[in-house]
Every structure is written in structure tokens, then in C-alpha cells.
Length: 130
Image 1: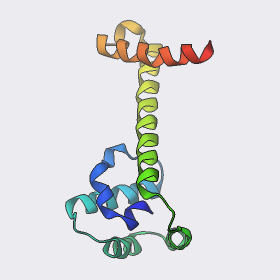
Image 2 (image 1 turned 90 degrees about the horizontal axis):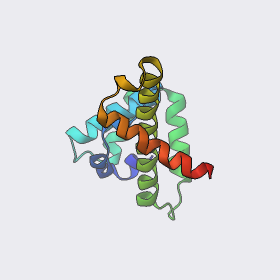
Image 3 (image 1 turned 90 degrees about the vertical axis):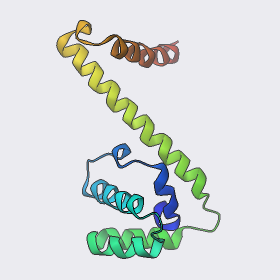
Image 4 (image 1 turned 180 degrees about the vertical axis):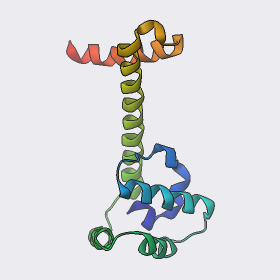
């Protein structure tokens, strides 16, 4: 929705930051790559491309969201919030992979950098427990 309204936001997002869990995620990644390869693409051009690739149900949902987005919609704030969520999700995924490696192979299997990251991750959790 935000990229339709302001395609230039795509420059601030990497396809690697997106989860690849659903067909919608994969479609968004392809649209993001298209926007980054053609920064002059307008929202209308993006919508045309989306129509060619997206299932009809997704298009109906997007159309409803576009129509319901009011003028008071703070796109910059929303986008910053979305970026922060993606960053946090990526960090959690990285930490889960480190924890799995440590549990499977022991802490000695981690590099010093990985052990440091794991300690940093555990510190905020310890503070929240107090």
C-alpha cells in the first residue's frame, strides 16, 4: 500500500529484508526489485504490474485498502514503523539460528562474534526479567 502511494520509498528497503513465507511476500519482493531497477516507476505503473501478477483476491484487498487510506495517513511514520518491524524480525531470526546452532553443537561452535551477539541478545531479556 505504501509503495503504491509513494514508490520512491522502495529505495529504503532491500528485498532481503522481506520475509519469504507467503506468495504475497514473494510478490512484494518482485515489485520492490522492479521499483529499484526503475526508480521512476509511478504508483500507476506499479499497480499495472501488480494486476498482471497478483491474484484477484489480493487485488480486491489492496483496492479496498487504497480507498480506505485517509488523507491523515502518515505514510512516513508507517513506513518507518514497518522498517523497524522488519529489522526486528530479521534480528530475531538471526538469534534463533544462533541459538539453534549453540544448542545443537555447543557454544564452542560459535565464533567470538556470534557469542558476542548472543550475549547482547540475552542482556535485554535479562533486564526485562528483573
